[in-house]
Image (tube, rainbow, N blue to C red; front, side):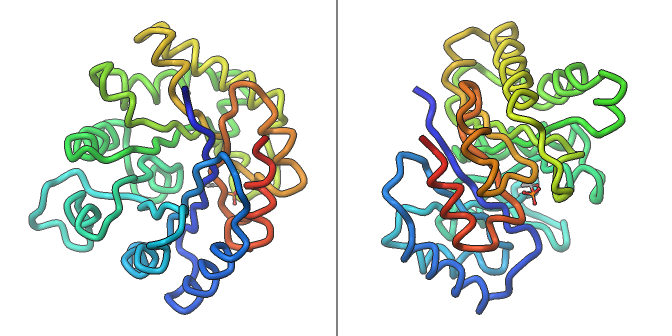
Length: 250
Ligand SMILES: O=C(CO)COP(=O)(O)O
């Protein structure tokens, strides 16, 4: 059965001291929940976050990684480095990586294979841009993003995949996909996976929604049958907001 997940992508926010304060607040206020709760601080604070959350159920995940095992890739971080500090889940394919750092489907496919090869869990992000939605091309785009990065994987790899549908036009804009739009796309994603693999795999993968999820819209978005939780940006930086979003998981 697929799990419910609420994950906070902190992006390039919070220095070490600020990270410690936010994590302390989250640990203290974390409610009893059936959701898996994850936070993704920036690389330099991952190790400290792992230490601080040792006795907490909050999981620390990485925002990115390189596909190479090691070598001359200045400024990059490998799967082994993450595993070495106790981080075994990684976000791959965030739209900001695609837009600002030139990460193509081809590069992302390599990253996914590299992470899975180390037995890591992958939270794979994808989603259409505003123009795609305006031209009703959004289903095609999403289908090709999934196909290019994931559909060469063996069926067995899918137990390690979490999907995060993040329409680019809803990220950091305050504009959310309506709960109906999210449900429509999530159902389409499951149908696409069913066609590529089978219904068992499609029904077992958690599909999160991301894009301006806030305490005041989370309940409605999470109530949709194919929405298994959220990947939260801005609201994950405020303890009370993130806790309220965790509480929105039924
Ligand atoms: O990009 C996101 C999470 O990865 C969403 O960001 P916002 O919640 O700030 O829109």
